[in-house]
Length: 318
Image (cartoon, rainbow, N blue to C red):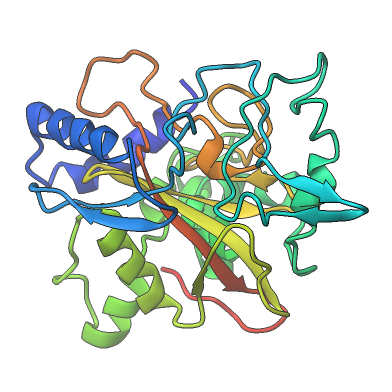
């Protein structure tokens, strides 16, 4: 499974959280029930104390699983002359039409890529598989660092040192020794404030994760999907598998999205192996039928963010 390494990564953290398969199923069922209605970015609270952001505008909008492979992957915009318009669709609902053969979009939305590019700021990081595929970077960095576009030189060097210490004749292409080095949201803030991680809270809900990433980097701002980030900022997104784990995405210069699953390679594909044009429409269920507590399904979409470009200012992670 593609996300197997990500599962292993979080076992050390999640083992400290009292997990109950029945409770997690109850939370996910509650999430699905709440997602049957609501407005974009509506914040709801379940009886289990789980904060859920509902990124669903119509009942026929997919949120976590793209079941219909023949359905258009675009927002249902319309053209007014040569201009894109959302006036008749202000909440950016998903198109319900069937795709044109050989395409990801319907006949009406063949210009979807240009539509999506109209919301770019011009400061989106390159989709650089070579940089992020370097063994010492790939093996020690995760989705959070990719979201921030932050390659930690000291983390890379520690990974190299650990690897060479174990493999005297040279490190293998796929490094497994550096998983403990991957940065976690809020660790930077806690280390700066307290000098240690004794007060670290291992809770993975939208509300708690939002607080974590904003405490590390106060310049990060929330933003709707169909709004440009300001100059020197690019767009990212966050999702969670409630109280299990988290994940991040960032937007590419061509308007598509990419992510780094744990210490696996970066990719611009979702679980269906389809390009990610709109993260809250993509398939984020990586459970693959596995019947255990560690199967990942990012049911809750926490929202979109504007992240400062590293040419503008540095971002923080540990």
